[in-house]
Image (tube, rainbow, N blue to C red):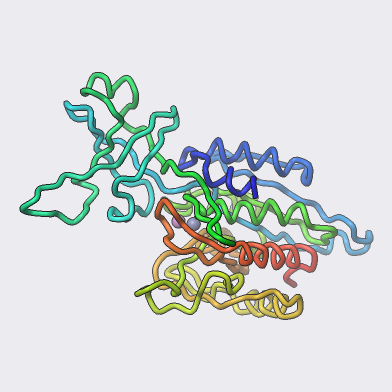
Length: 337
Ligand code: CO
Ligand code: ZN
């Protein structure tokens, strides 16, 4: 619980995942001896077969699990004479979801997002007419606090709302958390398991590509959030928070391999893990790339149902997180053959 909150609250937009990587590394060292960081910054932990007889060892497959460390952010493009910062998006930003929120830069500078307004002609929110106010008196002062190209992330503290968690960057720190917890729980495995904490998912699945290339797994499971159809006037979608881990059938760039999805469903049934089937009409995740790297990987995605994705207050349910970890642990111990 403390760990998931720390992961969410920490600064780590795409390309600036160092702080997240440090937290994860220190939390998995006990459970994995072979941890590497590749050139792009992916953290790759290799868990060798253990707890099985010699005969079974060497017959296993390579299974890659992947969750992305990065979160969406805002990058400074211009500082005006009054010290207001103009910015553009790093990843998928919905302008209307970020108005008047707080942001923080890597160096600790904090700002508030404002918008140009005129009483007579109210404008819809576009990033073009939004700015970040860092409390500077003028351009010169602002330039001592931030530079062009600095990236801001949302500044927000996780809180429990009843049995649910509200936090920024649940996308995809909650996925990272599920992988860490899974690593802690595995008792035995005959397969070579690779846990990849990837970089730059939000700007085009970039880390997943090099990670998959290096590992060349036979099987891959990505873990990420998905939106839900359970809030007022939400799109028609058969996924709700609190109803279990979502097994992805399709999103805009990925189709779950039927053999993998059948396996995931049968494990969930056998273990009495609540699950739901997900079709996400817009958006995708790391598995979309992993499945087509080198000779390809038989791939699936487990999603944690999440409300208000890509806002400063995403919401998920702890029961779904537990269901996800249980199913992941089952895959690690029993394989996907
Ligand atoms: Co995302
Ligand atoms: Zn994501």
